Image 1 (tube, helix red, strand yellow):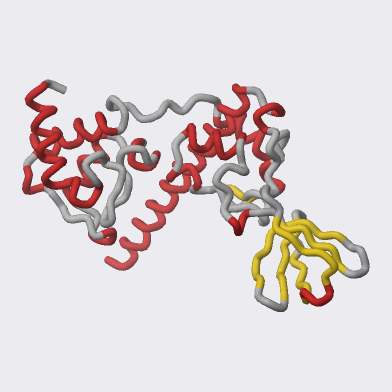
Image 2 (tube, one colour; image 1 turned 30 degrees about the horizontal axis):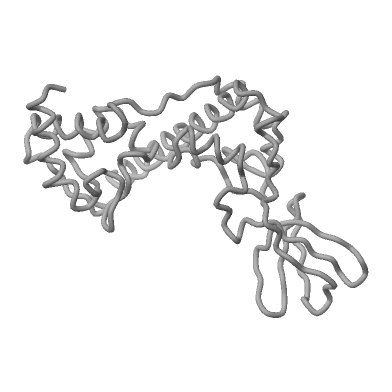
Length: 249
């Protein structure tokens, strides 16, 4: 991008886009992060231009077609600079090998689901990679206890009869606890019948993937999650298009 185009893109971005997305593109009170978020980085220039021209009315984003093609193109070029030199984070690894790992050696499918297949106790990861960079996904795999949310912490329960249960608390109040164990079974306890009950400072997810899986296998797993998210996005777009066509008929 030439100096004049870069300056034009910067000025237009700061006067038109920064109000919602922030001067650095990393989000504000009225707009999401479009600089570091994987979903924004992975859009092609053509897709980004289309968003700028037509807007996203449902999300409250207006159309900027009136700016004209040169200014819009300059904004896209400047956005690429904010995103890290005009290139999205490279996705390494082989998605097919990653799929085999997900449902095999890595045992991710014991807890997580993708495309309707897998376990129930963990989050559905079908679209997870749409909102995370490759590096963020890798860290989430190798260091699952980093920035762990309270609701994701492992719960350990011991009944007065001495039976132990480990899982995730799905519902809790002053008198009762609903626990989902690793096998997906739900257990309802009255707290007065419990001998011991505590939230541990770790998640159910294994924390040894950094040593159990090689660097190449981690790349493969990340690649599969990214490709799965893209497939889910395309399927959703196709379904939405079909619904709109039915309404028009």
